[in-house]
Structure formats: structure tokens, C-alpha cells
Image (cartoon, rainbow, N blue to C red; front, side, top):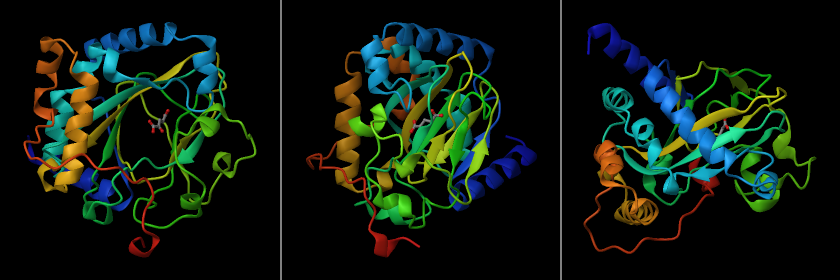
Length: 284
Ligand SMILES: O=C(O)CCC(=O)C(=O)O
């Protein structure tokens, strides 16, 4: 990696630590982008009306378990090298989700996704959990681009009192007046080009605009755990067991593509319950 690339990635790492996100442009390449789109749209077409209705707010929530075709995107060596250079290397993978917002569809509610608020790393610069969001379409306010509340990965926010992410009622959007669908001071839009990657801190509050177009808008969200061996053993154990439970049936050639990010916890600690709620006293 040249000096200018290293300096640019150092800046991105700083932004990830301070604001909770950064954008890595053009990370997929045309072939992997097209292949991943084909995999994602085939999976979306298999869903019933009832399944789509159950996740009206986020859009499809299709787990990677039955989709080994996502392996190229998950194991993308260009992204792994960038994370390494940013100081977020030795990441291990838990799961990926195909999130396709039908056109039209409503806003995604504000939420944070950290499940490891009991791990001391949750109160440090190096989050126990990050997201890699690969957008497969150009995004804008019109088709439901990502919105973020920079800094909320380290700071208490009123949204922390408004309930857990991804419960059935909020996914179905039972209450359209839920305050998690509102605008908040300091929020930013993050429109990107197809093939760009948003790296974000799982502790950060994020949401999307509504998709007001007539086209699907699709992202592959990948959950990574950087500096894996520095997490508590309990946390490592859970991630290891959950990864293998979900992906044990993947064919060897798909597992080979994600080999560097497969968790390999060898200890004897039982997987714990996870905790999605931070300790207010330990946040800024
Ligand atoms: O659909 C999006 O753009 C955001 C997805 C998201 O919030 C998530 O995967 O947690």
C-alpha cells in the first residue's frame, strides 16, 4: 500500500473512531457487484407477501445461512486489507443480511445493533462489533439512503430508552407514530454509489429514508468483530458458536472464500446471553 493510501486509511480510521463511520469507495468491483446482486435479487424473489409485510420498515431481512453466494462479498480481500491497515484487522464474521427495501417502502427506524454492551470493549475506541454495508445500488434521499447520528456510538441519546432493534412490532411498523421514525438533531444522510462500502460502528444509531421510487434498493450488511482475540472469551465463544451454527452447511468452496474471517475459538467457555442495552453511566 502506498503512503497516500495509508494516510487516507488512517484518516478513515480516525473518522470511524470519532464519528462512528467512514466510507470506502468502490470496494466491490464490477464482477462481484453483479454476482452479489444476482444472489440477492434471487433471494428477494423467493419471499412471500406475508414475509415482506413482516419487515415493512427495514425491508427484507434475509440471513446469509442459506446464501453461500454471498461469500465473495463477505471475504472481499480488498476490504479486509483496508480494515487491517485501519487498525480494525483480525476481524471475525458472524452473519450477513440481504436488506432490500422495496420501492416504495417506509423509513427504517433509528436503532443501534451492538449486542456486546457487557464486554469492556463496548466502552472503548475499538467497538466489539462493526458493520460493513455494501450498497448494490446508488443511494439517495429518494430511494432510502442511510442516515446516521454521528458520535452516538459513545454518547447517551434519548433513543437508547426507546426499545430494542428489530422486534416484530417495529419491523411491521405497527405504530407509525413511534418516535424512532422521527428526525433528530445532528443526523446526516449518507448517499453512496453502488459498490461503495460504509464501515460503521454497531453502537451507532442509524436509520434510512423511505424508498419513494419504484425500484428495490439493496444493501448487504455484514457483521464483523474486529481484533477478535481481544474480546472477552464469553463474547468470542458466542460469535464462534453462532457463526458455525448458521454456516455449517455452506459448501467448502464458499467457506474457503471467507476463510480469514471464520471465528476459531478453542476455549471451553459457554456462549453467554447477549446484551443490547448500554450502561448509561459508562457512556459520555
Ligand atoms: O438498509 C439500510 O440501508 C440500513 C440497514 C441497517 O440498518 C442494518 O443492517 O442494521
